[in-house]
Length: 446
Image (tube, rainbow, N blue to C red):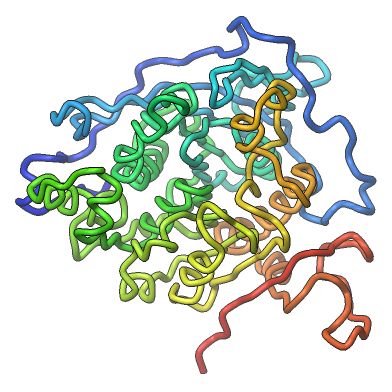
């Protein structure tokens, strides 16, 4: 476990992390609407990206409550226990044909409840391990969001032999934030805690006794963050924050120099809350930052980005109007390491990672705008995300060298060059089923 340290200017802000399990929850018993199926029709197998196809394992899911002891609370300005609700997906021996499937319940940004039908089995026993243990993948949502906003990705990875832990980042969920009257009430907590929450989750599941201890690989893990989750993920693998007077004032809303300086001391950390020089946890073997925020404000230190060695995939829409495509391109260009990639969805905005909008979100623009992509099907985006997420994790976390070929792509996916001449389809994609994307990757140093 890595000790979180800060400079004296931050006073007592953070202590060493300790963890306990407070209990488990069963969201399927909560009252809400009947669950809706967001993915009623799948493409034929021949039309699916190769790695988007379901894996060999049935998937179980359980909700657990974790507590990170003595963490700084910006609202109270004191050290308090930070409670985190975490959804955990994992391989199981049970089959959904004999057991009811899980239902994922949450609420929209305006507080409208919804229920989504999943494919995992609630409270199923973990699989009987007969081979290699399963690596952990941590999923981290944006501001605002919720732990199941990428449930499609969690279920998919678990079916291929991963344990997936997705957090409700406290102070940053749809339920926590009043998007009409106080839309930025949880934003400073988000800036402070995203990377810390991610590292804490890794520490808990790989260092303490828990219900997946018998099957989890304690030395290999992946990290996937969307939007503010991506902001945290870049930091967690070594991209140190560099808030200055201007950006700290902007995101605290304060003109008080003492407040601004205190915020800078709190925020300018690295790799899960460490002061420089920070040591990135070597368990992180791959990171995916989807529409990561922060590059548009130059919040990451360029020298630290250049020292990142964790294999990294950036994913962005070229019309992202929240995180800014140029800001994300800048992060890609500054990130070191030979295994650095960037996938661009052309004509996509920011909402490239969430599941499709629940029916109730279509009642108003605030809720629909949390999911909707004007030019892309969210289902298709989700399908492609499954493919590339599994390629990254299998190649760099499980070290399956044959899967690395799915990341060795060039240029456009449209099957024609700039002169209109035909080119082969991207590896893993059927002919005519991959348009509107481009791929960049760092060339190995000679």
